[in-house]
Length: 310
Image (tube, rainbow, N blue to C red):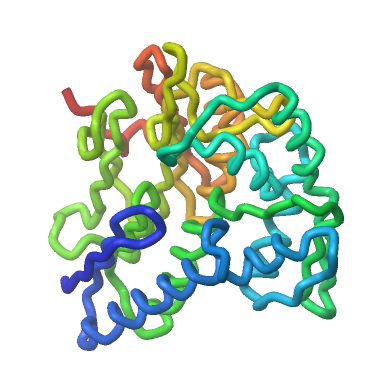
């Protein structure tokens, strides 16, 4: 297995593959991921996505087919206000700035003003022109909840088309596995599940998986403490505040990485036992929920594939 490690998208990316031309393919994959970051970024004023945001309330902007595709997918799920996903959440994220040095708790008036700008129904898409128009000035699309999953799937398709049969695409909290493990007797990979109450690389358990995606979202990723109260980066579009529930982290195991990103975000405002009950009914989808009380809940399909540590 040959590997490449680099920093991008605010995390450490690690790619490992087994192939005759691994060096070339890994460098091409890195090039593609950096290109995705440059075009899809909601924090780079020069990105194509930011051009859409800068022309909010002014005119439609034609975008690349892959950006249009992800925005279209994101809007379909965002207009359902019963879940937490909202790709129009940008103005709220930039108001709170959680994860940045100047994070703050906004005034209620500031929050109320931003709530008028985060309606995903105000995103107009033109399939023929592949253009995006945000109806109100000040609106901003943020694809951060979906982008890494989309990127991982695209890289997987590229590598498989090149003949790669075994490998790991690790985008930090988002792990996509190709084929079977090259040395483990059971052919299954072991993917660590982060302990949400400890620093990175402290694990609560290991998942045994093959040809699957493992995506984890947790309130430990980006937090901000003000007057003794901790605020995290996953927002409720109805209130303008971080989601309040008993979930510390949610891990989704699925075939496609984008599916994992969708469900970790969509289900984050639900209660732990409800998440498990609902995902038990969905084919090819499994979940691990860790509550703030350190309870670990898993769906039926993972009973024999989750190894609890300590």
